Length: 616
Figure 1 (cartoon, rainbow, N blue to C red):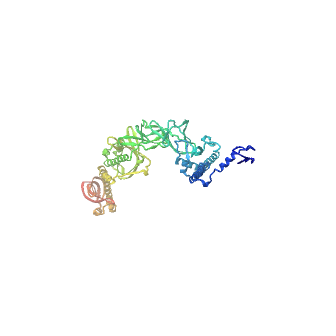
Figure 2: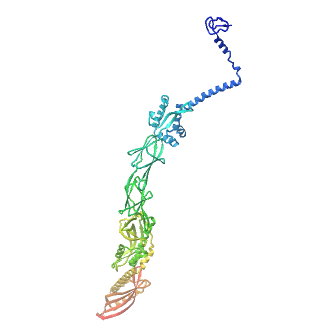
Figure 3: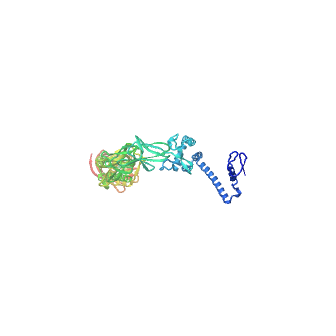
């Protein structure tokens, strides 16, 4: 039996609808039947319970992972991390989250360090960049950011962009280190360019401006190479490239004229032979070259006395003086030639003979020969020897005259010398000479010889280099030379003659005045001649004899080994007696003269012989 659930009327059989109200009766039964078919939890098997639990756990895990992934890819969280790394200077983390737009440009620590340095020096740029990134994060859901051109600020160093999916279901956001244009300005067209050692082709050139393309922030070595006819020029700069950069890469290029002191000298640039030679006017024009001081030039030439070269000159002007100079060893050869000349001159003056100037294969120029002849003329003669010599090798300079090489340098010479008239007494004294001496090189003798000299005002003692001489040997050489001995002997002979003449004349005065004191100082105190003179004065006094000296001739002065002298005389007197008679008498005398610390002294009248007598 069934009842209608709508009107409550009793129905019979399997009628599906109520006969009273027409409602569906079978649906109610079906529902009731269905509800009664659901099993209770206690009726489930263990396997069923495990499956249901695992499903629930999986669902919870998926929800958790989704939330974690959502946090990892959250724009705000990413920006917070970025700001933290930026503030702390965490280079490694910044490298891990930064990317570039080009596969060829990988962000490295050097790139990040360059960016951090720039932002530290430009805090306003850092603040602007962070502000722009925040704006990008806020508006990222309102529109899709795909390229830098869509940004509010096209000069942004770091951009924040949605780039595909992460973990398949999340939006992926990246921090992009943007590339910016690198431009250099140069003044030469035909150049090769290198960035960090790799040759590049510029994207474009307009006037002096050369566009290298875009590069992410970093420190770049940019080099330009110019190849001229004889030398390759390079100009390199370090560019701190953060944002758009414009860098000057100008070549200080010019043509430089090099002046030297010889034709045919080789020109070397940066240590390499250019193959160029100096011309007839001793110059060479080189170029194009850098004139910023980064290049060097030198000239060299092979000579019979060795290779000579200039100093290495920095190319920083359009005209350079690069005189060829001697090496230290070659300068020593010049000083040897100078020393030999002064040794030869000292000997030639000692012997008064020009031939000694040629000793040791020394070349004698016409100037040197004529100068020596002036020193050793017939009337006036120079005697002396070198004692000291200083040279200024730092001031030595070379020049080429009619194919002959001349080395000129200042010298300071000191001599013991005297310039005397023939017959005058010789007295050596110290004399000084400051001059420029010029020496020529002889390919035949392979030596430098003095060619000429000229006076100068002063000598730089701070650059002086001393040349030593054996002064004792040079002094002995002069004193033992016949020419000096003769003039010295003649001087002594003249002194002895003068002394004897004076003594004889003073003797007549002493005899007539009966005064021994007139002669006493001229008699050697070690001799007995004082008594002889006194006795003679007493004899004349007793006899009343006086005399006049008519004439005295010194016939000979004979040097003795002990340093004394015999003097031979012819004396003429008029002698007057007390009976008013008188006689003319002539005597040949022989005197002995000694040389003492007090000068010449009369030692004895060795002999006297009357050779003529007649009445007056």
